[in-house]
Amino acid sequence: MKFIQLAAVIFLLGGSLGAGAQELYVFTEPASNMAAKSIGVRITNEGIFNGGGNRTMPEVMFSFNKNLMTHFQGFFSDMDGKYRLEGGSIYAKYRFLSIDDTQRHLRAAVFGRVSTSKRPTYTEDINLEGDNSGVQGGLVVTQLLHKLALSGTVSYTKAFDVESQRVAGTLQPDQMIGYSLSSGYLVLPFVYKNYNQPNFNVYFEMLGKTNPANGRSYLDLAPALQVILNSRTRIDLGYRFQVAGDMAGRYNKNMYLVRAEFNFFNVLK
Image 1 (cartoon, helix red, strand yellow):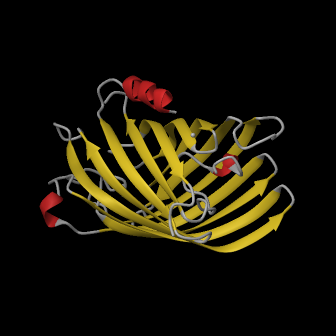
Image 2 (tube, helix red, strand yellow; image 1 turned 60 degrees about the vertical axis):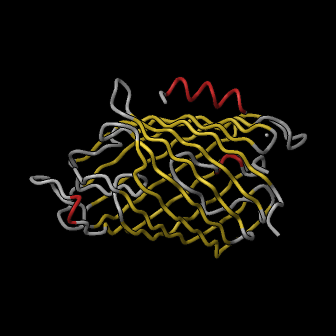
């Protein structure tokens, strides 16, 4: 499905995300979790303009309590020819710190991910959302300051050594240190009257990775826009692009992202 077609479908579908909406980052996860006992459903499409291919990622999220949530994700793309199932991922996050105050809070969480993919490996970069099989662990800290939310993430990723997916003459992924700094600002509403008011948020994220074996690295900038409707439906539009680095062959070097998320509250017993 092309970018414009999927965006049109999402806006036609477009129903509690209102509180702390400006920390619902588009390219990273915050330390905060979904509302307890809730289920979320996402559909994400990302890819490259001008026929560069695209990937669709359906996702189901479960929030068991205020501290623990999990994501189950699938990957479909036409990166290697026809559209096909590439693999899947399980992500879990545990919030271990919460410091609350009036119109501000501090959250910290640890997270982990295990992914599988049948794509051939073309680059030393490790992307566990469709391109590589591997395992990841990390720490995220998020600070909400009234309408501004700031978040930092650090992670370690280890790729599984899958002999059958190696491409002769290319660098093989092994391990990667990831880091990000994200900011989100609540533009609308100016004053909260109820949770049914539409929210409009703007984001700016910096996403980087370093290969500890050889020192090669990259840094991406990622601006994004977000609309939240009825505190239940979330729509994201974003684009990431590389501004520095020497890691060749990356799929997501210049990539758009469009996403719709639907939340169902108090459905888990």
